[in-house]
Image 1 (cartoon, rainbow, N blue to C red):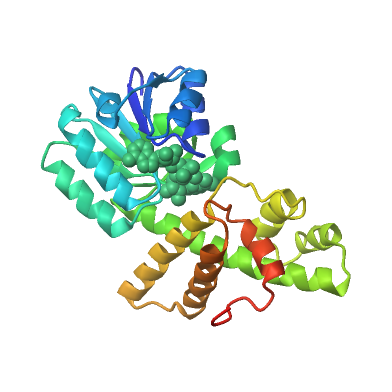
Image 2: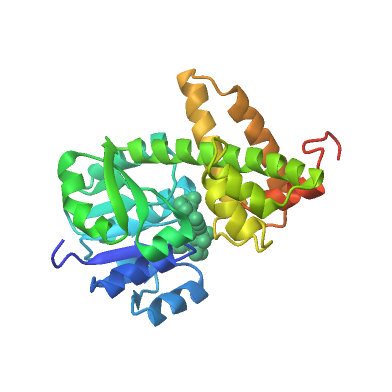
Length: 295
Ligand code: NAD
């Protein structure tokens, strides 16, 4: 890693704390985001803002993308490609679509640029504390090349060839979304019965019904009614669709997952744009019938 110069594109909920960690560790980071406020936050944290993605990426050894989805990643990679130096490596840490990531890596390889996937789990908290689970898809050599840099952000694990990280990330979030929905229905039933939510969580978290939703999301964002985990509901739904799309393509079972996608689709369409994913618990409280045709 020594001396690696880094460009970081996408300074949102995750990119902001991730770049702050890199800068604090002494890494030279040039960053870009289309939102001016994001660039200003990045500059305040000690980063060097650029006025375009291509300017940020010019001459960098490593270009990290932390963007909403594959559409945006592909557009940004196409934009920066001409300014990348030969041998540069693009690390897509966004939650993108695995098959599109594979195809994108093949396209950029023609120009002498390598692209690997390294999506994360752990949310804004994990990004701030440097404890993200980082799922890396690429060759052994590529993993070795970025391992030390990624270790500043969390725990990188080499999970397979290009696209493997994105597949695993989507699968993880499909489970997480199903847990959040299921635990919310269960918690609302207990509350309606007259049980105390904090007491319920204490017992459930020492019992077999526990999940990341009961251990972290319910006590931190739902019981206090802040709904501000920093991960948008629409981004969660995007990840669920990536995972069920894979299941459909591979012919693996997705009966419960497909129903979960339908429920989340309904909630996300109904929630205020930009709502946090934890707001589905509030939505369920307000729409106890859930998915009702013509509602
Ligand atoms: P976000 O919406 O907060 O940030 C995305 C940033 O990308 C925004 O600041 C936006 O202005 C910027 N952007 C959009 N188009 C751009 C472009 N063309 N060029 C430059 N910048 C552009 O999203 P986030 O929560 O930071 O998530 C980023 C990625 O990480 C997503 O793929 C998400 O699914 C994934 N993720 C998020 C979390 C979380 O808890 N927030 C956790 C794990 C993974």
